[in-house]
Amino acid sequence: MNQQFSNVLRRSIRSLWGNLSLNGMVVGVIAAALLLAGAYLQVLINLDRMMSEWDRDVHISAYFYSDVNEDRRFAIKDDLAKLQEVEDIVYVSEVEAGNFLVDKVPDVKTILEEFGSDVLPASLEISLRSAFTNPADIKKFVEQIEGHDFEDIDYGQEWVQRFESFVSLIKSLGVVVGLLIIMAAIFLVANTMHLVVYARRAELETMKLVGATFGFVSAPFLLEGAILGLIGALIATLGIWGVHHLLFLRLEDALHLALGNESLVFLPPGALIALCLIGMLLGMCGCLTAVRRFWVAAP
Amino acid sequence: MIRLYHINKSYGKHNALTDVNLHVKKGDFVYVTGPSGAGKTTLLKMLYGAQSPTSGKLLVGGVDASKLAAKQLPFLRRNMGVVFQDFKLIPTRTVADNVGLALEVLGMPREDIMRRARAVLNTVGLRGREDAFPLDLSGGEQQRVAVARAIVNDPAILLADEPTGNLDGAMAVEVMEILLAVNLRGTTVMVATHDTGLMNRFPNRKLRFESGRLVSD
Image (cartoon, rainbow over all chains, first blue to last red; front, top):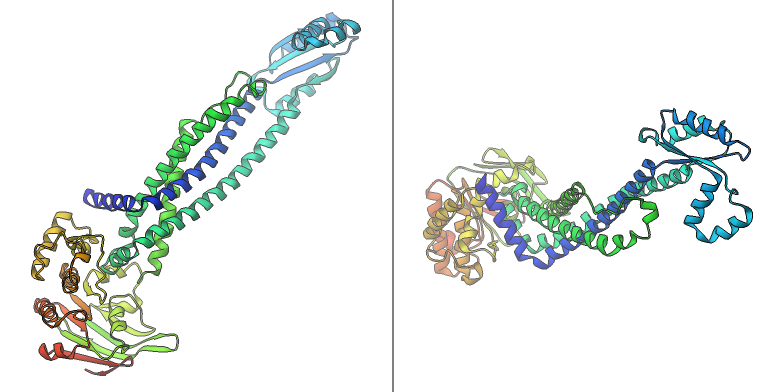
């Protein structure tokens, strides 16, 4: 077994060393394909984290009719606080709402002074427990509290749902695009490896004529493909890391509001391992396709 | 050892072999002769599975080679040695590596391969040339390397396609003597040649082909 493996390894290294430029092309193709796929994956992972953050931070603002008196408002607040879905509930008076707005947008101070500090409606700011932050539960909760003297209930979930649909679409597209990228990469690797096989056709043909099996001939190519794929994946990882640091992290400030307390993350170790395995698989499939094409045609 | 029943081989409208029937017994030494295009090479290619007959039955070592699955072909070839007309030596490998190729495909340990290769190279008179590369050798030496590779695994059948075609008289005699020595050890040998001088010098059974037909045996 060791003897056979060392034989395969020796032949692989010989081929890797003997066809540097073509092997470089294979590495380049795999690296480019995985760079695209990896960067796409990184965007998806960060979008997912963004959505989880939003889901975690579901915040409902229930605005009172102006004619509901303060005692009634506190009574409603106490009633709602008893509900199992509610994690936290805060009463925000008209004046507090005005102050909050002025804090965030100082320019509106003069307008508020002109119209009166109680121009904004009083509200209850409700945070839900994490077990009830899925869209169906939120909708159910909002329907449940709608009768409680509220003029309007705003929970921004419609926008989140639209965004979730958008991300699902990107994910589905990602699967299709990913498959296309992988198929294109296999095609390109196979064609490039075909040149490597062609350069060694006399040797391989002779091997076949003296009784070599397909496994014997293809094993070093498979190993070669795996090595090239791994190198391609490592280069792609380096590229994605570069994109992460040079581009994504610069976007972090701009995305601060959307990200909340989260920051943009690099691909997790599992994804990096998957990327390496996909790279090796790409290399192996490409090499196998090229060798098989030769093998069928050889005498 | 080798039996052909009504073998036909055609390439489009051209018939390379027509209704060939023959029997070669174990340990025979047989010349396959005839003019160029008579079907000698086609016959040998069929025997080592590089081509399959259009019709008829072909038995090699008891195996029906005409119905052999692609996966079984390597195992048929491991039981025979072939000296190709164009040698088919790998220029990037040393002489010893070229000879050892037939053992390498069997998964034999490298030390054993080198030991056997050196012994066979000694037999064909190429001692000391183990580490040379084929392109550094003369035509005659290359031919002998090809013979060494064909016999290194002690095959039951040895097929040689014009093994003396590129050689001068003395060298051709040397190669023929090697083939005869292999035959003496029990290997069935079939040599495709149109060198009548050699056939007269080393008389053996002759199969004469003309236009794809076996005209005399």
